[in-house]
Image (tube, rainbow, N blue to C red; front, side, top):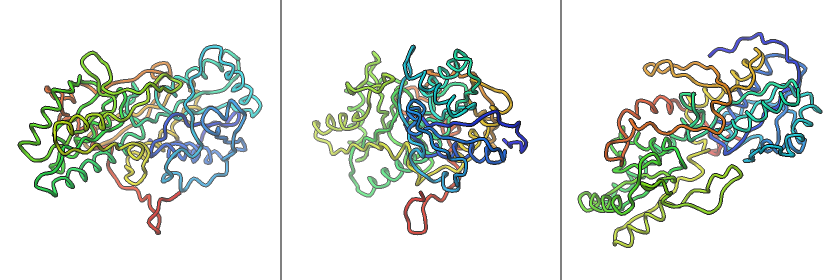
Length: 399
């Protein structure tokens, strides 16, 4: 989507914050927003809230109006810092946020995050109206889980899917080095959504598709599935399994869950591959548990050029919407065509996405509920296209 060169004059300063876990392209959305702001040639300020919404609560903002954005597309992690914090009714932090906005004449507030972050964004939008303070609130989507409603997909997912697919290919090839390998169990992120784990099916394009893929949307019978893996290994001498961290049994109970939770009540995940591997080991099979962990979420070595471009565009679109009078909305991506792949940008009300999530459609899960259908590849393949040079001349990441 092209951004028009002439915006309406800003009525006040801008503030942007990042929320939740970082993605490989979260800083690209900041770049898109900041580059669009600079084209206005306005005297109004562009602030970022330090460590997510915490900066707004504590009045700790940084003026980045003159920031050189050249390297933001390559920078891993969150440039501004982030925070997971649930705002509740009558939260004393709400008044602190309004005080910071008013003190700094902030009339445009942009929140870059996922489901819970959009819920926070919606509450802030309502707060501005309640306090009768004229401040436009716009949500900028990002989540590797790809589970935001309305939008076709979310920035961050494409690069994560690319990382997972290529890592699974490398693990599969490594195991095929030997006549008899192991039962390799790879764990991907995904508490409730199987989109990340499903990306491992892209390995089929290199003829090393995992033997079994399990997502939270399909019930998982531990004893039954482990037996299938062992039978596959007995026949082939190899078995490659990919599981979501959030796989559940037929009653909806997590196969492995922690007692720890974040401020939104989300249970801490991780470790299910180790648990399943221990069961396989007890049966006398060679096995290895591999948890992809943080690099799958925010690693910038395998950036998708498509993902980077779209992350910048949602940032640009957010400013365009704000200056055209839109308020209380989140930017959305619409897939107009798959071949050739084209998208357009629009918006939806924050209440349609805040605190809500979508699941991996059942049409992408096979009848046996132990793998992913080929139709999913048609959906995900366009999102991983294109290369971005993220390493400097000395072989290390560009920061």
